[in-house]
Length: 251
Image (cartoon, rainbow, N blue to C red):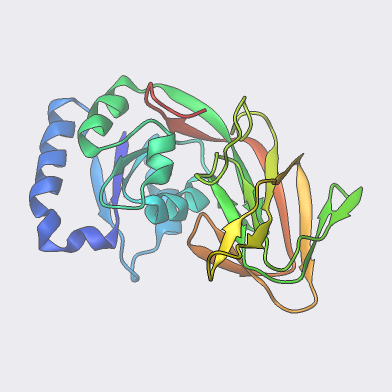
């Protein structure tokens, strides 16, 4: 059984025709199911508890990265498979999973190619893509073995999927390898511009668990949306989530 979860921003009338098309296509392909529309008054945890008891095995997130990141924090507790129909901007996660448009999503969901992937966990919050750490005086304790202290102006992130700013490849940022990557990009001032320019070197440290501490509170953003405050413990949770992927997935 399928459960389709629509983000609340899709309640706007400009999405009405697109949602009607989606509902027609998934029905025609034999992958239709119940529809649940998110709102501040509707409890996702209770919904998934009740629907999984009722036999739901597949959750399709209809929305963007923020929607997907929100839902996996509840879906990770159950033996379900998660797919996505991307709508609007900010759909980097869907693209990484090999789903670049609603039209492509229908075929991907129907083909049902499933991969089991790792999730990161920051305190009690799961993330698939990564987290970013606001600039500040932080200490990162890696594996209880050594410490890293980035410069105040450095860009610091921890990733499960490859970030757009990373130029490295070769199997790095693989959500199936049981590792996360600490990625530090130093910044240096350009004498020709009144702004900071990326430095040519960066640091990449694979790990399974780190602790981020700071003297003053520093914000940490999970998948670009939920904000946590230091101290934060971050770890990899291997094989935690089953996702539906397309042939053009980027891992």
